[in-house]
Image 1 (spheres, rainbow, N blue to C red):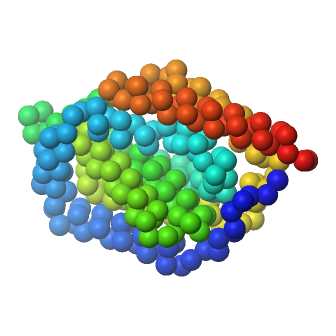
Image 2: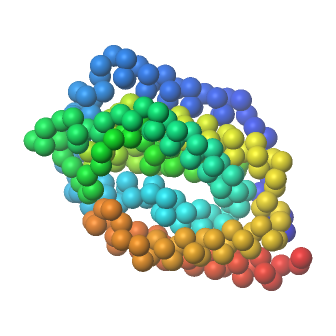
Amino acid sequence: MTSPLALAPLSPGWCIAPPLVFALAATGMMASGANTPAFIAINQWTSALPDGVWAGVTDTASVLSAGALLALCLNSAPRAVVTAVLAWPAGIVLVRGLKALIDAPRPQEVLPADALHQIGVTLSGYSFPSGHTATAFTLIAALILSTPACRRALPAVLLLLAGTLIALSRIAVGAHWPGDVLAGAAAGWLCAVVGVMLAQHWPLWASRRAMIALSVAGIAVCLARVFVVTGYPQAQTWATALGLAGLVAAGVSLKRTVASPA
């Protein structure tokens, strides 16, 4: 089974520039003492939109929702799916390692209740970096780095805007500081670069057996996305719809792969 997409060589500019910019911005935000005032300003500004909007946006980058998004890409961008899956172990090590090492307090722990607008679950500790933002930018970078069409101006801008919205949502729900989401974006992009390099050695999108396994995994994740209750109740309808859409896509991928020549 071969991918309908041409293989995309690694570009140093696409690989290095974005995470470097995000990391420098995170460093500047924290070193300058702007983290708290920037959080308060963004959190108050975003509260103008309904809570359900931000709950839906932020839940899109949860683990199960990210899995459903990957299932949606199985048919159109299998190489990007493989890249993101291979990047996942690096993300767990890097993001969870930094969280455990730094164990920074959340805005909900530091600021008085009347100084922030909170949506959904109350979190404590392990604020740096933002895991949701890292997940979002891993998927976005996997698409951009693995799919030539996604490096065109409009698709790349749209993908980066989607990542920006998810990063803002983590501030909007009161879960993360601006420095956290910038660091999360840098970490996610770097993990995608690792995924791209691994995918060059293991082109699993060209393996019938691997694509069957990914399709079956996609079905399982999407079923979980439909039935598992989210930590953001306002987003449950969106999460269910995303799971159902991913379930259909994964089913189509499985059917096509099984029917293809071995």
